[in-house]
Image 1: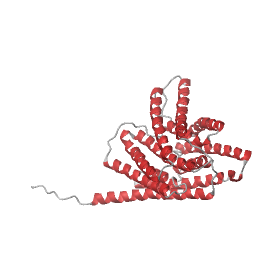
Image 2: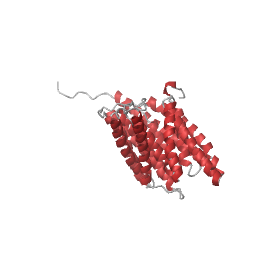
Image 3: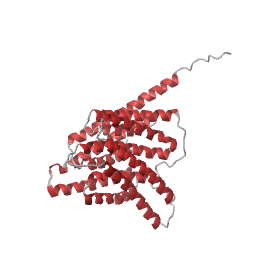
Image 4: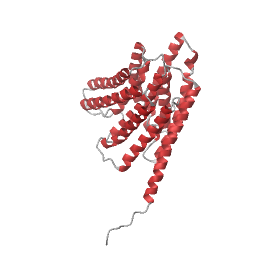
Length: 359
């Protein structure tokens, strides 16, 4: 579970992310609206992940279309985040099903669709949390603008790099991601798996928001990430996701207790320091994504937790809830894949009906 793949370690890439991510951090420090920082960072990161390489015109058009879709997902998530759990469940089912069926447009688009799917669940949780913070105002249009600004920042950086390198074509920035864009036929197993993921995510969203569970949105995120096409993959990824979430939650809990009793100028300094720590953790996540998935989950979880909870410093109970819901979500995903595997084996062993045609 913690086996390292040294070839997957990429520090230059992570330093590049940190350099670019400092731009929105300083901007939101200056204007004083840190509640929009997470949207800008995800817009930047996902635009980077979607960049197909090649000629700049091709890259810009692809990333622009992806950014517009991401802006729509952001608007939907933050727009309905404070609504009743029924609407959240219906939206989660529709978005997850659409992401699963995106496999028809190629592996590359399927992977980026899953990223947007994960971001949608995060927007629901973040919007729901911000709605309960009386002293923090979050506007949907501003979250969409922050997401779009993060994606536009990546386009700007790549444009400058393209000019500096003499307008040459560039390879795909993250070569480990699949690059296939050839369309594929939606076979029954693909449709069933997409529907199964949609049911799992919608069910966990209903539990999280219908029962008003504290930090319950971690449950659908864990279920969605854990579910893979095969039972063996699901078991391994669920275990790695759980271990990473536990390490990340404990780390974030210790760090978020630092500003709990601080006030005034010291609270301001500690808060800004923790935002930088969160960026460094995300940088490490970028570096080790293909080195070890469990450690990647730990770094991303800790960084995201710090950025989400800084408006209202957390406590040990909150981190415990996150770990608990992560366990439940990963367990639900694993259970559904186990049941689907058993049903598939049973159907394969069932005797075929006798041939009733006349001889």
